[in-house]
Length: 465
Ligand code: NAD
Image 1 (cartoon, rainbow, N blue to C red):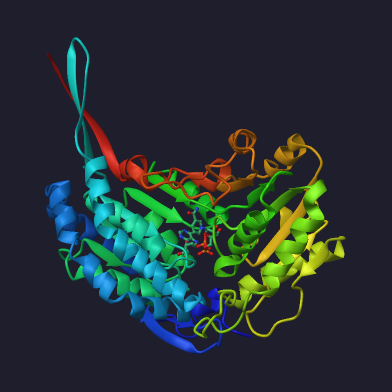
Image 2 (cartoon, protein in one colour; image 1 turned 180 degrees about the vertical axis):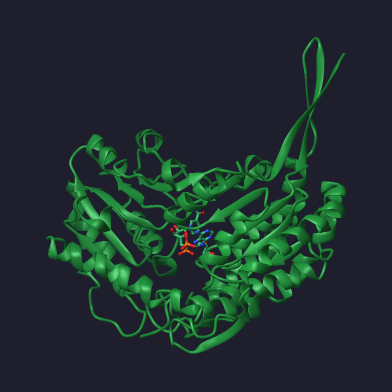
């Protein structure tokens, strides 16, 4: 069996954290685990370093970071290769992720600086300035599924806001996160960005240490634990959590576009995307044709070693993740679901892209986040029924609606209880939009001007006119 995340910190050698290639089982490399008892000292050092860093203006801090964009760009291929080897993402996508961070770097810095500029509010009596001050020390705790982008999205606004950051990447993807931090640290003053390596033990120690802000991206379960641990100290938290995104396909939808979207968005990154399409509700009148088109496109996907030419679906990140996904598929089939695609036994950590029809909400696969290449299709007879099903979940991250009548599709989209809903597209918004989950998918949010301001303490300075 290939190593799972739990075994990445071997019990016999607690000092090293080794990454294993989930496609081949080969060791990729190791980093030293951060001893838990060193964490309070690292947090103290961060607090010392934050004094000088926090005294700069937002624009000055952005200027310190600006040259890192070119370094990230120059290293995009190396970072992408490392990410692909650590977590199994197809190589072009992994390099694309590094390039995305590098290409958007300067614009992101400018957007953060603009979002954190003083704003003035006044009435007949008082003139007030809203000032966005640093919070202090930020713990940024990241998942493995976008191992460059997820750290980047927390670290950049936290730093420009004037905080010192301790970055705790996932135990699955420490090597690439380490390289990312090294690049930023070529330009940052010492102690402003400190990587912390380990698993949930180190993550929890960081949350419990003397930090002022916890920016977490990960599962709903861990998010709840962090919220409980942050509670007694009333520490600020931003929690970006899991999802169970629905896609509603209305009877007038462009079925080719809807099926293409469903296949891309259910199987991208082997389904290990927070806004993967996991539940598909399709009008009963078009169910057959939609399933046929989806199955055709699914058969055209190439699964294999993520570094091989043309492969668009890699392995699950770990044996543990595979076991969870396979258990959901098997239980659904045993309870009456029909396999339209996938289901074949696979070697190693691979799970074939799978389409399940005739699913119900009594099945785990329709209730719990799968985080694997599984698309579940359920028919509906009325739009109200589709909405009832789409909203029958504690999650509320993303969603999509496909339909040609835009007024109707928009009306359906507005009635889905999710943070981000796409109409005839994915849920990602225009530049400047926040990345935001509703219900149990998020607690606070990041990105866009509103998101950037959550990394700062707003202060109101008022005087009589
Ligand atoms: P996870 O919750 O298992 O781990 C995330 C991070 O938290 C890791 O670094 C881990 O070491 C750390 N951690 C674990 N226990 C901790 C604790 N008690 N205190 C502090 N830190 C702790 O999640 P994962 O498996 O790495 O990532 C997959 C999950 O992330 C999925 O649920 C996915 O939907 C979610 N995700 C959400 C978004 C979003 O934007 N909403 C984006 C990417 C991933």
